Picture 1 (cartoon, rainbow, N blue to C red):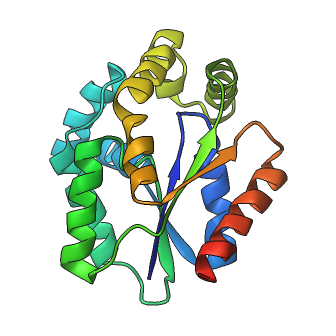
Picture 2 (cartoon, rainbow, N blue to C red):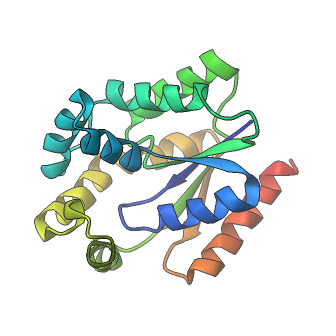
Length: 195
């Protein structure tokens, strides 16, 4: 079983690349954003809490996110060859808790962190476009977008050092055409597979 993290700021193209990787490598895509939106739509207890935090541009509590992740891993179809985590982990504390979760359940660890690197100005442009296409309210306010980008820089970027120290971090230029980014990611994954 392989465990990949697709990493990068909001609007970097993580969802697009994850969809392509799922098809090619028989991975299960786990997007915490998608899981949380499902909970919000259901108006579950988790969904109500998450909605308030997301609307302010804040992160949802680690314990809630980790429980959702644990459940998805444990209930995965046996035909799945691995997982691609999109939007998780977001903080050092989540990364450490995730390492413990993998060790406890499957005696495994993260295989690679595939990091899409994109400038802030392009991120704003992409998120605005996504809001128009998908009608996502959490993407429609410039204040919320800028808050999410600042939160990413402050809380999530420290993960770069965390995964570099473990030899798991692989940067990828995220401002290229989708096909070129995908080709670069596949080259990295094939080189890891052959190690």
